[in-house]
Length: 273
Image (cartoon, rainbow, N blue to C red; front, side):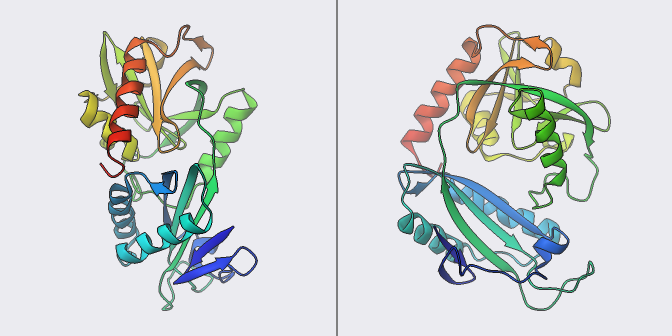
């Protein structure tokens, strides 16, 4: 594996950052996961725009998009894979042990790993913890993912691949690494970003390509929706055949199946929509 670190390619053994990097010591960093298909990144412009928004949300300098693009090209050429997880990490850089930042500038790491296509349907559970829709980092994709690690581990113990959160006012929010959509009377709905969810790239494309609506949804909508599906960079559109103890037989249902087809066709037509 070859990794881009602060200006050039390194092999895995020599790609090292300081043990005092703020991304490690206090989670002061942002990241993007980009799907790579046959060596080409998908929706990279949208991902870079969100990376910049996230960096601004933390008060980090804007990342250099040209450098990040060069880094993505370099690692994809060095490690060609048919389907890859391209990870862009941008941190506050070497700093003191406290919360305050140092003066060394940000750290940029880009790496790629091979992945596999997800099954058409999966299971999810709800968790008792909440997203804070009024928090300072609501909607910012930071490296502070420990809460997601805990929730996802709980999902795995219950035979599920994703955990779903409500927010502080009892509305449906998002998964640990996905957005959630429900089908009600043939119409597609997803929580608005004001719910505290991450503004996912795949989420945005599904909204644009299907006419889905952003709607405040109570968490218990999962118990009565006709169909439920998740979206994310590596899932694309994935149906849920179970939420908690509720089975959704026949998943993906007709609306979800149509959404899957639309997304597959449109994304194949344009790698940077």
